[in-house]
Every structure is written in C-alpha cells, then in structure tokens.
Image (cartoon, rainbow, N blue to C red; front, side, top):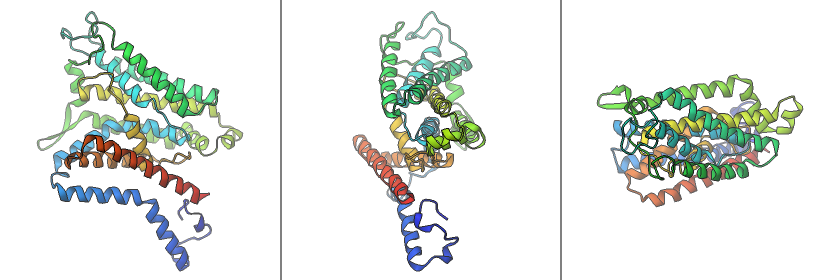
Length: 356
C-alpha cells in the first residue's frame, strides 16, 4: 500500500480495489513519478539526437561528476529531512576548497599563497577542512535549535559570512585575491588519480571516496540513534520532544554532519578543478537541493532515503551533461534547472496534501 495515497487506507491489495480506486491509484502513481518519467524520456531523446551521449567515456564522466556532488547532496538532504534547508553549503565548499588548495600547493611554486609554509600532509589538511565545515555547521545548527530561527534565515546569514571570510582569506600572503593553483602532485594524485580502469577510461579515486561516504551516511541514517531522531524531529518536532528525543542536540548534530559533508566536497573539488577562487562552490547548493527533491527527500520533513539522493544526483547530472551534448546555452541551463526545482517541489507538496 502506498502511504502517499490517503484514499488507499484499509485496502490490502491492488486486486481488491474497485475499478474507480484502481484508476485513482494509477493516476496518483503517474503523477508521483512524472518527474522521473520526464527525465528518463529526456535521456532517451538526448541519446537519439546524439548517440555519443551514453558512450563509455560519457557514462564515466557522468558517474565522476555525480560522485563529486554526492557528499554535498547527502549533507543538505539531512537538513531537508529536518524540514529545513542549507543555503550556506556552496560557500562552505568554496571556503574549504580554497583552504585545501592553499595548504597543499607545491613547494617552490611561484604563485604559492604562503611561501614560508611547507606543503602540509594531505591527511592533516583533510582533517582541517572537515573541522571548518563542521564548525560552520555547528553555528547553523545551534542558531536554528537554540534561537528557534528558520534554517533558511540562519544559513542565508552564514552564507554571506562564509563568503566574506573566503574573500578575506584569499587576500592573505602573496595571493592578493587571485585563484589558487599549482597543487602538490601527491594531493591531486590522491583525488584524481585512478586505481580502476575500463580499457582506456579511468575511474577517478574520488568516486571510491564518495562511495565510502555513501556507506557511512547510510549507516548513520538507518542504524544509529541520530538517524532515527533526525527522521522523528523532521516528522513532528514536538512529538519527538515529548517522546524523549533531545531535539536540540539532534538538529545541531545533523547540521554539523552536513558541514562535514561540505568540507569533504570542498577537499575533493579543490583537486578536481585544479584552480580555486572566490567563485568556487557558487550555487552548488542549488544543484544539491534539486537532486534531493528529485530523489524524494521531502521539504515537509521526515521523508528521504539515501538511494533517492543518489538517484536524484545521477539523474540531474545526466540531464545537465545531456544539455551540454545538445549544445544548449549555459544561461538557458539555469532556467531549466530552476524549472526542475519548481516542478519537483510542487509534486512533493502535492504528495503531502494527498497524504493529509
């Protein structure tokens, strides 16, 4: 029985439905999955128009781009499950990417940001950037939980604060606000090197790291008290509080975990793109939010699955890569992205109203 369809209450199987209920059931299923149907149809159309779209190199490229965006999407998904969001995600990615790049530039590089600082160990920089992400997430969660502010307002404020910190950071040393490049080979090889190949096509290492992140997040969501409390608070915060859930700690921890995911994204992104500036991470949160909603993470709270987030990220990336294959203007792609978010949110709200 589909929980999203109120009219199916008490009906135990499709065969027991009346003809009218069957029609309603099929109609609801069609509407609920209409976005998926549209996206799959678009993929088929793009493949027909450009047969190279689903070639092996293109598929590996789509997988790689999806993997790079998975951590930030998983982080934002937790915030959405709490019936909130996180607008600061992209700027946190930008800050952590620039910090990673600045601390892992080659020794002796002419454009090195901190000329008197030796290249730090990769593992140490990783810990630093996830600590930065977690700290900003802590601020987001604390202000949301303690001051009862809406996450939209809190994260809008921290988005601006983080961006200001990033701009000031880029003025340090001899950088003077310029892009940070010249990354140490150990760092780039760790992220973009390849242990797996399919013929002449290599799978970047960060795809494996993203899979590890997915497994960890699945365990947290489904096997830990934090995961159970997250869904409880998202479904009904007052009921969760009455049931003994520490709602304040839950909100803070979920936002901290999201911040850590953004830090991981920034660490990967810095090496993946090679040259980092104040524009790194710009609007990344929009792609992540769109992917979450497409994947069934509901803004009404308490609903979402890891596999849905993965599906949303991959489908969205397929569409964007497909638009590039069709040579759609990059400005028009923003319009399409906005329409996808609008339609996905409208369908999500419709499911909620039907369920009520």
